[in-house]
Length: 349
Ligand SMILES: NC(=O)c1ccc[n+]([C@@H]2O[C@H](COP(=O)([O-])OP(=O)(O)OC[C@H]3O[C@@H](n4cnc5c(N)ncnc54)[C@H](OP(=O)(O)O)[C@@H]3O)[C@@H](O)[C@H]2O)c1
Image (tube, rainbow, N blue to C red; front, side, top):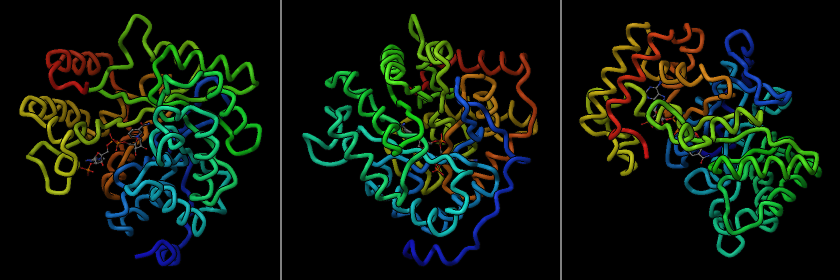
Protein backbone atom coordinates (compact mmCIF):
# COMPACT_ATOMS: atom_id res chain seq x y z
CA UNK A 1 0.00 0.00 0.00
CA UNK A 2 1.40 3.42 -0.89
CA UNK A 3 1.61 6.37 1.44
CA UNK A 4 -0.81 8.38 -0.71
CA UNK A 5 -3.44 5.61 -0.52
CA UNK A 6 -2.95 5.43 3.22
CA UNK A 7 -3.41 9.13 3.63
CA UNK A 8 -6.97 9.09 2.33
CA UNK A 9 -8.24 6.18 4.38
CA UNK A 10 -8.31 7.56 7.90
CA UNK A 11 -10.04 10.62 9.26
CA UNK A 12 -7.84 13.35 10.67
CA UNK A 13 -7.35 12.56 14.35
CA UNK A 14 -8.39 14.89 17.07
CA UNK A 15 -5.80 15.00 19.80
CA UNK A 16 -7.15 14.15 23.21
CA UNK A 17 -3.94 15.73 24.49
CA UNK A 18 -3.69 17.34 27.56
CA UNK A 19 -6.02 15.53 29.88
CA UNK A 20 -4.55 12.11 29.16
CA UNK A 21 -0.87 12.97 28.80
CA UNK A 22 1.75 14.38 31.12
CA UNK A 23 4.01 17.07 29.65
CA UNK A 24 7.46 17.75 31.03
CA UNK A 25 9.69 20.76 30.63
CA UNK A 26 12.81 19.99 28.59
CA UNK A 27 15.78 21.21 30.59
CA UNK A 28 16.14 24.93 31.21
CA UNK A 29 13.97 25.92 28.25
CA UNK A 30 10.40 26.90 27.50
CA UNK A 31 9.57 23.68 25.64
CA UNK A 32 7.33 20.97 27.07
CA UNK A 33 7.53 17.46 25.64
CA UNK A 34 5.02 14.66 26.09
CA UNK A 35 6.39 12.33 28.78
CA UNK A 36 6.33 9.63 26.13
CA UNK A 37 7.48 10.33 22.59
CA UNK A 38 7.08 7.99 19.65
CA UNK A 39 10.31 6.82 18.02
CA UNK A 40 10.26 5.77 14.37
CA UNK A 41 13.38 3.61 14.26
CA UNK A 42 13.10 -0.07 13.21
CA UNK A 43 9.34 -0.39 13.85
CA UNK A 44 8.84 2.00 10.92
CA UNK A 45 10.88 -0.07 8.46
CA UNK A 46 9.31 -0.14 4.99
CA UNK A 47 8.91 -3.93 5.14
CA UNK A 48 6.47 -3.65 8.07
CA UNK A 49 2.75 -3.29 7.27
CA UNK A 50 2.06 0.34 6.41
CA UNK A 51 -1.41 0.15 7.96
CA UNK A 52 0.08 -0.73 11.33
CA UNK A 53 2.70 1.99 11.14
CA UNK A 54 0.06 4.57 10.25
CA UNK A 55 -2.25 3.36 13.03
CA UNK A 56 0.53 3.57 15.64
CA UNK A 57 1.45 7.08 14.55
CA UNK A 58 -2.10 8.42 14.61
CA UNK A 59 -2.96 6.61 17.83
CA UNK A 60 0.04 8.21 19.51
CA UNK A 61 -1.17 11.66 18.55
CA UNK A 62 -4.75 10.89 19.59
CA UNK A 63 -3.46 9.95 23.02
CA UNK A 64 -1.53 13.14 23.52
CA UNK A 65 1.91 12.13 22.27
CA UNK A 66 3.05 15.37 20.67
CA UNK A 67 6.71 14.50 20.21
CA UNK A 68 7.96 12.33 17.33
CA UNK A 69 11.54 11.20 16.94
CA UNK A 70 13.13 10.56 13.56
CA UNK A 71 16.57 10.47 11.97
CA UNK A 72 17.67 10.64 8.35
CA UNK A 73 18.86 7.02 8.52
CA UNK A 74 15.66 5.55 10.02
CA UNK A 75 14.04 2.85 7.96
CA UNK A 76 15.30 0.70 6.43
CA UNK A 77 15.74 1.83 3.76
CA UNK A 78 17.41 4.99 5.00
CA UNK A 79 15.17 8.01 4.61
CA UNK A 80 12.01 5.94 4.61
CA UNK A 81 10.79 6.82 8.12
CA UNK A 82 11.03 10.54 7.30
CA UNK A 83 9.19 10.05 4.00
CA UNK A 84 6.48 7.94 5.63
CA UNK A 85 6.04 10.35 8.54
CA UNK A 86 5.96 13.26 6.09
CA UNK A 87 3.21 11.65 4.01
CA UNK A 88 1.00 10.96 7.03
CA UNK A 89 1.75 14.36 8.51
CA UNK A 90 0.85 16.24 5.34
CA UNK A 91 -2.42 14.39 4.80
CA UNK A 92 -3.66 14.12 8.38
CA UNK A 93 -1.69 16.11 10.90
CA UNK A 94 -0.62 19.28 9.10
CA UNK A 95 -3.40 21.35 10.66
CA UNK A 96 -1.89 20.44 14.04
CA UNK A 97 1.65 21.68 13.24
CA UNK A 98 1.63 23.97 16.26
CA UNK A 99 0.90 21.03 18.55
CA UNK A 100 3.60 18.69 17.25
CA UNK A 101 7.31 18.54 18.03
CA UNK A 102 9.13 16.86 15.16
CA UNK A 103 12.75 15.89 15.69
CA UNK A 104 15.26 14.51 13.25
CA UNK A 105 18.99 13.81 13.31
CA UNK A 106 22.04 13.64 11.08
CA UNK A 107 25.67 12.70 11.45
CA UNK A 108 25.88 8.92 11.14
CA UNK A 109 26.67 7.48 7.69
CA UNK A 110 23.78 8.32 5.33
CA UNK A 111 25.40 8.58 1.92
CA UNK A 112 28.83 7.97 0.44
CA UNK A 113 32.04 9.23 2.04
CA UNK A 114 33.63 11.68 2.38
CA UNK A 115 30.57 13.95 2.86
CA UNK A 116 27.88 11.41 3.79
CA UNK A 117 28.35 11.28 7.57
CA UNK A 118 30.27 9.18 10.09
CA UNK A 119 33.77 10.65 10.33
CA UNK A 120 33.16 14.18 9.12
CA UNK A 121 29.50 13.89 10.08
CA UNK A 122 29.93 16.88 12.36
CA UNK A 123 31.13 19.05 9.49
CA UNK A 124 29.22 22.04 8.18
CA UNK A 125 29.25 20.35 4.75
CA UNK A 126 27.46 17.25 6.03
CA UNK A 127 25.10 18.78 8.55
CA UNK A 128 23.67 21.49 6.30
CA UNK A 129 23.19 19.10 3.34
CA UNK A 130 21.66 16.45 5.58
CA UNK A 131 19.26 18.89 7.23
CA UNK A 132 18.07 20.17 3.85
CA UNK A 133 17.54 16.60 2.63
CA UNK A 134 15.56 15.67 5.75
CA UNK A 135 13.29 18.69 5.30
CA UNK A 136 12.68 17.65 1.68
CA UNK A 137 11.78 14.07 2.71
CA UNK A 138 9.55 15.29 5.52
CA UNK A 139 7.97 18.00 3.35
CA UNK A 140 8.52 20.56 6.12
CA UNK A 141 9.95 24.08 6.26
CA UNK A 142 11.50 23.42 9.65
CA UNK A 143 11.92 20.74 12.30
CA UNK A 144 11.40 21.48 15.94
CA UNK A 145 14.57 19.73 17.10
CA UNK A 146 17.61 18.97 14.97
CA UNK A 147 20.10 16.60 16.56
CA UNK A 148 23.71 15.89 15.77
CA UNK A 149 23.33 12.10 15.96
CA UNK A 150 26.78 11.07 17.10
CA UNK A 151 29.91 12.83 18.38
CA UNK A 152 32.45 13.18 15.56
CA UNK A 153 35.99 13.20 16.99
CA UNK A 154 37.46 14.30 13.65
CA UNK A 155 35.65 17.62 13.32
CA UNK A 156 36.32 20.61 15.59
CA UNK A 157 33.29 21.17 17.81
CA UNK A 158 33.46 24.87 16.85
CA UNK A 159 32.53 23.90 13.28
CA UNK A 160 29.70 21.64 14.40
CA UNK A 161 28.35 24.32 16.73
CA UNK A 162 28.43 26.99 14.06
CA UNK A 163 26.61 24.78 11.53
CA UNK A 164 23.94 23.85 14.08
CA UNK A 165 23.51 27.48 15.14
CA UNK A 166 23.06 28.48 11.49
CA UNK A 167 20.24 25.95 11.12
CA UNK A 168 18.44 27.79 13.91
CA UNK A 169 19.29 31.24 12.50
CA UNK A 170 18.02 30.25 9.06
CA UNK A 171 14.75 28.93 10.44
CA UNK A 172 15.41 25.28 9.59
CA UNK A 173 15.32 24.14 13.23
CA UNK A 174 13.81 25.67 16.34
CA UNK A 175 16.06 23.84 18.80
CA UNK A 176 19.31 21.88 18.76
CA UNK A 177 20.09 18.54 20.39
CA UNK A 178 22.93 16.05 20.54
CA UNK A 179 22.84 12.29 20.77
CA UNK A 180 25.46 9.72 21.78
CA UNK A 181 27.84 12.45 22.89
CA UNK A 182 30.17 11.90 25.85
CA UNK A 183 29.16 14.19 28.72
CA UNK A 184 32.28 16.36 28.47
CA UNK A 185 31.73 17.05 24.76
CA UNK A 186 28.06 17.80 25.42
CA UNK A 187 29.13 20.48 27.88
CA UNK A 188 31.65 21.96 25.40
CA UNK A 189 29.13 22.05 22.55
CA UNK A 190 26.60 23.62 24.88
CA UNK A 191 29.05 26.43 25.68
CA UNK A 192 29.98 26.94 22.01
CA UNK A 193 26.32 27.15 21.02
CA UNK A 194 25.58 29.55 23.87
CA UNK A 195 28.36 31.83 22.56
CA UNK A 196 26.33 32.01 19.35
CA UNK A 197 23.09 32.74 21.19
CA UNK A 198 21.68 29.22 20.77
CA UNK A 199 20.81 26.97 23.68
CA UNK A 200 21.55 23.23 23.60
CA UNK A 201 18.05 22.00 24.42
CA UNK A 202 18.40 18.27 24.79
CA UNK A 203 20.68 15.25 24.79
CA UNK A 204 19.32 11.94 23.51
CA UNK A 205 20.95 8.99 25.24
CA UNK A 206 20.26 5.31 25.84
CA UNK A 207 19.13 4.81 29.44
CA UNK A 208 16.94 2.34 31.28
CA UNK A 209 16.88 -0.12 34.18
CA UNK A 210 19.29 -2.40 32.32
CA UNK A 211 21.52 0.28 30.75
CA UNK A 212 23.19 2.58 33.28
CA UNK A 213 26.13 3.80 31.24
CA UNK A 214 25.17 7.47 31.52
CA UNK A 215 25.16 7.15 35.32
CA UNK A 216 28.83 6.13 35.56
CA UNK A 217 32.18 7.91 35.43
CA UNK A 218 33.86 10.47 37.67
CA UNK A 219 31.47 13.07 36.26
CA UNK A 220 28.53 11.22 34.75
CA UNK A 221 26.68 12.37 31.64
CA UNK A 222 23.51 12.37 33.75
CA UNK A 223 24.97 14.82 36.26
CA UNK A 224 26.37 17.05 33.50
CA UNK A 225 22.94 17.29 31.88
CA UNK A 226 21.32 18.09 35.22
CA UNK A 227 23.96 20.73 36.05
CA UNK A 228 23.75 22.39 32.65
CA UNK A 229 19.96 22.38 32.43
CA UNK A 230 19.98 20.21 29.31
CA UNK A 231 16.94 17.95 29.01
CA UNK A 232 17.40 14.19 28.60
CA UNK A 233 15.41 12.40 25.90
CA UNK A 234 15.84 8.74 26.75
CA UNK A 235 16.05 6.29 23.91
CA UNK A 236 15.33 2.57 24.23
CA UNK A 237 13.52 3.09 27.57
CA UNK A 238 12.24 -0.51 27.35
CA UNK A 239 15.73 -1.78 26.50
CA UNK A 240 14.37 -2.46 23.01
CA UNK A 241 11.83 -4.95 24.43
CA UNK A 242 13.76 -6.58 27.30
CA UNK A 243 11.85 -4.44 29.81
CA UNK A 244 8.46 -5.69 28.64
CA UNK A 245 6.61 -8.98 28.88
CA UNK A 246 7.74 -9.83 25.31
CA UNK A 247 10.22 -12.55 26.32
CA UNK A 248 8.81 -13.88 29.57
CA UNK A 249 7.52 -17.07 27.94
CA UNK A 250 10.02 -17.57 25.13
CA UNK A 251 11.01 -15.61 22.04
CA UNK A 252 7.99 -14.80 19.86
CA UNK A 253 8.28 -14.96 16.07
CA UNK A 254 8.73 -11.48 14.58
CA UNK A 255 10.00 -9.94 17.84
CA UNK A 256 13.19 -7.90 17.75
CA UNK A 257 15.11 -10.81 19.25
CA UNK A 258 14.36 -12.78 16.06
CA UNK A 259 15.05 -9.95 13.62
CA UNK A 260 18.19 -8.51 15.22
CA UNK A 261 20.92 -10.92 16.28
CA UNK A 262 22.47 -8.59 18.86
CA UNK A 263 19.09 -8.39 20.61
CA UNK A 264 18.60 -12.17 20.47
CA UNK A 265 21.96 -12.62 22.19
CA UNK A 266 20.74 -10.52 25.11
CA UNK A 267 17.72 -12.69 25.80
CA UNK A 268 19.64 -15.09 28.05
CA UNK A 269 18.29 -17.41 30.75
CA UNK A 270 19.60 -15.13 33.46
CA UNK A 271 17.92 -12.13 31.82
CA UNK A 272 14.57 -13.96 31.58
CA UNK A 273 14.81 -14.90 35.25
CA UNK A 274 15.34 -11.25 36.24
CA UNK A 275 12.63 -10.01 33.88
CA UNK A 276 10.16 -12.44 35.48
CA UNK A 277 11.03 -11.07 38.92
CA UNK A 278 10.66 -7.49 37.71
CA UNK A 279 7.34 -8.50 36.22
CA UNK A 280 6.20 -9.68 39.64
CA UNK A 281 7.10 -6.27 41.09
CA UNK A 282 5.11 -4.65 38.27
CA UNK A 283 2.11 -6.92 38.88
CA UNK A 284 2.17 -6.08 42.57
CA UNK A 285 1.68 -2.46 41.48
CA UNK A 286 -1.07 -3.49 39.06
CA UNK A 287 1.26 -2.68 36.17
CA UNK A 288 2.83 -4.15 33.09
CA UNK A 289 6.61 -4.45 33.08
CA UNK A 290 6.87 -1.80 30.32
CA UNK A 291 4.93 0.61 32.54
CA UNK A 292 7.23 -0.08 35.47
CA UNK A 293 10.26 0.60 33.26
CA UNK A 294 8.86 3.98 32.19
CA UNK A 295 7.88 4.88 35.77
CA UNK A 296 11.45 4.09 36.86
CA UNK A 297 12.79 6.58 34.28
CA UNK A 298 10.29 9.36 34.82
CA UNK A 299 11.12 9.59 38.52
CA UNK A 300 14.26 11.47 37.42
CA UNK A 301 13.61 15.19 36.82
CA UNK A 302 16.29 15.49 34.12
CA UNK A 303 14.33 13.03 31.94
CA UNK A 304 12.14 15.15 29.67
CA UNK A 305 10.71 12.31 27.63
CA UNK A 306 11.02 8.57 27.01
CA UNK A 307 11.21 7.75 23.29
CA UNK A 308 9.39 4.45 22.95
CA UNK A 309 9.13 2.20 19.94
CA UNK A 310 5.97 0.18 19.34
CA UNK A 311 5.33 -2.53 16.76
CA UNK A 312 1.55 -2.42 17.35
CA UNK A 313 -1.17 -0.13 18.65
CA UNK A 314 -1.71 -2.55 21.53
CA UNK A 315 1.91 -2.16 22.64
CA UNK A 316 1.71 1.62 22.44
CA UNK A 317 -1.56 1.67 24.37
CA UNK A 318 -0.16 -0.61 27.05
CA UNK A 319 2.85 1.64 27.58
CA UNK A 320 0.77 4.83 27.60
CA UNK A 321 -1.74 3.35 30.05
CA UNK A 322 0.99 3.42 32.71
CA UNK A 323 1.29 7.19 32.77
CA UNK A 324 -1.51 7.83 35.25
CA UNK A 325 -0.27 5.19 37.70
CA UNK A 326 1.43 6.10 40.99
CA UNK A 327 5.14 6.85 41.15
CA UNK A 328 7.53 4.26 42.56
CA UNK A 329 7.84 4.34 46.33
CA UNK A 330 11.30 4.42 47.90
CA UNK A 331 10.87 0.79 49.00
CA UNK A 332 9.88 -0.34 45.48
CA UNK A 333 12.80 1.56 43.98
CA UNK A 334 15.27 -0.01 46.41
CA UNK A 335 13.95 -3.52 45.76
CA UNK A 336 14.39 -3.04 42.00
CA UNK A 337 17.90 -1.62 42.40
CA UNK A 338 18.93 -4.48 44.69
CA UNK A 339 17.71 -7.06 42.19
CA UNK A 340 19.46 -5.43 39.23
CA UNK A 341 22.72 -5.00 41.19
CA UNK A 342 22.93 -8.78 41.65
CA UNK A 343 22.96 -9.38 37.87
CA UNK A 344 25.71 -7.35 36.19
CA UNK A 345 25.91 -9.83 33.30
CA UNK A 346 22.51 -8.93 31.94
CA UNK A 347 23.26 -5.22 31.72
CA UNK A 348 23.43 -3.63 28.26
CA UNK A 349 27.07 -2.80 27.55
N1 LIG B 1 19.73 8.43 19.13
C1 LIG B 1 19.99 7.17 18.86
O1 LIG B 1 21.13 6.79 18.53
C2 LIG B 1 18.88 6.17 18.93
C3 LIG B 1 19.14 4.80 18.88
C4 LIG B 1 18.09 3.90 18.99
C5 LIG B 1 16.79 4.38 19.15
N2 LIG B 1 16.54 5.74 19.16
C6 LIG B 1 15.17 6.28 19.28
O2 LIG B 1 14.48 5.62 20.34
C7 LIG B 1 13.29 5.03 19.83
C8 LIG B 1 12.94 3.80 20.61
O3 LIG B 1 13.97 2.84 20.54
P1 LIG B 1 13.66 1.33 20.79
O4 LIG B 1 12.72 0.83 19.73
O5 LIG B 1 14.93 0.62 21.00
O6 LIG B 1 12.87 1.47 22.17
P2 LIG B 1 12.10 0.62 23.22
O7 LIG B 1 10.86 1.42 23.48
O8 LIG B 1 13.04 0.35 24.33
O9 LIG B 1 11.73 -0.79 22.55
C9 LIG B 1 10.68 -0.90 21.63
C10 LIG B 1 10.34 -2.36 21.41
O10 LIG B 1 9.86 -2.94 22.63
C11 LIG B 1 8.75 -3.78 22.39
N3 LIG B 1 7.58 -3.17 23.06
C12 LIG B 1 7.25 -1.85 23.09
N4 LIG B 1 6.18 -1.65 23.88
C13 LIG B 1 5.82 -2.85 24.35
C14 LIG B 1 4.79 -3.27 25.21
N5 LIG B 1 3.93 -2.40 25.78
N6 LIG B 1 4.68 -4.60 25.49
C15 LIG B 1 5.56 -5.49 24.95
N7 LIG B 1 6.57 -5.14 24.13
C16 LIG B 1 6.69 -3.83 23.83
C17 LIG B 1 8.59 -3.85 20.89
O11 LIG B 1 9.36 -4.96 20.46
P3 LIG B 1 8.99 -5.83 19.15
O12 LIG B 1 9.46 -4.99 18.00
O13 LIG B 1 9.75 -7.07 19.37
O14 LIG B 1 7.50 -6.00 19.14
C18 LIG B 1 9.20 -2.54 20.44
O15 LIG B 1 9.66 -2.57 19.11
C19 LIG B 1 13.61 4.77 18.37
O16 LIG B 1 12.45 4.62 17.58
C20 LIG B 1 14.35 6.04 18.02
O17 LIG B 1 13.45 7.10 17.82
C21 LIG B 1 17.57 6.62 19.08
